[in-house]
Structure formats: structure tokens, C-alpha cells
Image (cartoon, rainbow, N blue to C red; front, side, top):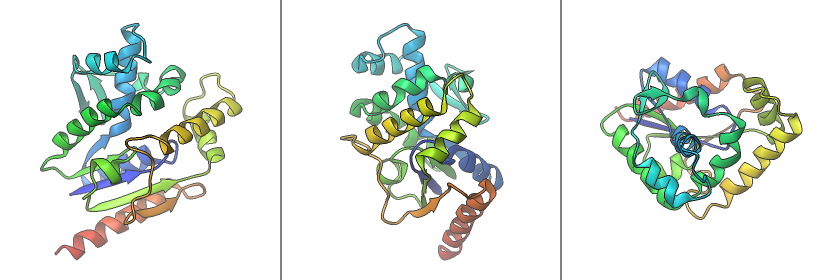
Length: 216
């Protein structure tokens, strides 16, 4: 069974997906971590992050895996390196590169084959797993998302800086030629702005329960 959660950055996709994975014993898959890991890999190599063909070439030289929910490069966790301002400032442009998206999507589908998976990330419900058993689209205001980002990663950035980055990211994501941010027609829409994580989690669990019972 595949459960897919889509939506813009900062709406609670990762937190909820991890909660669902733990409660339902599903494998947790975060597509955004792949793009962040490849961006980080390019930066560590001191290579030009705007040289996207080179970034893809370097991406194919490493092996990404997931261990205990953390993304790993060649077996070593880099989870704590993926949400820095340096990665944040580049990842939207990196993830908009169609050949890289195709490469990442192949990996996501391969990992998910034959497993119970909860997958979250941009275009996960519309492109990567369009036949997912349960689809959810989370949303929240840019202002609320900026406040959440500051609480999670207070790395000397101002509220205005974070808000501007989020708005810029949204604009890029909505206008991508491939993998644009869209709401799947059959997705459960949840505005998480003023809901607790537990409340959002309950809505997703209810959708999963309904789906399982409907398939019996």
C-alpha cells in the first residue's frame, strides 16, 4: 500500500509522514531529501550548483539510502546537513531540473516496490505515485510556515528572510515545467495552519482506515 502526501514546504509533511510510518509500520520515503542530498553533495564537492548536468553526473556517482528515517550518502547519514540556508537557497532550482527529477522518481518507485510506504514530497501524488491508495495534500499560509521554519532551524535568519525564501520556493514549485506543485483531484486536502500534528495525523489515519476497509 502506498500513501502519498503532497504540498508546499513547511506544511508538516515530514512530521506527519514519520508519525504515520511509526503508527502503521510503513516505510518512510521523503523525495525532498533526495534533492537536498544531491544539492549538498554538489556543494561538498565545491562544484557549481547551477551546473545541473554536472550535478546529475555527480549524483549518479553516489548511492543514496535510508536508514532509521535518515537519508544517507554511501551509507553515512547526512540528515543534519540537508536543511541549512545554503541548501535551502539552491534546492528549488535543483529539483526543477527535469532529468534529475526523472532519475529521482525512478529510485523512489524502485524502493517502494512491494512495500507498505508513506511517501511525501513535491508532485508525489500527481507524478511519482499517481496510483497511490491514499493521497493527501497539505497546505498552510506562508506566514505560518515561516514561523515553523524558524522554530525548527533558527540559524541566524530573520522572519522576513525565511518568509521571502518560502514565497520564492512556492513560485518556482508552481511554475515548474515538470513536476509542478498541483493538487491531485482525488487528494484529501488538509489546511494544517491551525491544526495540531495529532489532528492532522488522525485525518490521514482515518483515510487509510477507510481505504483498507473499502478494499476488503
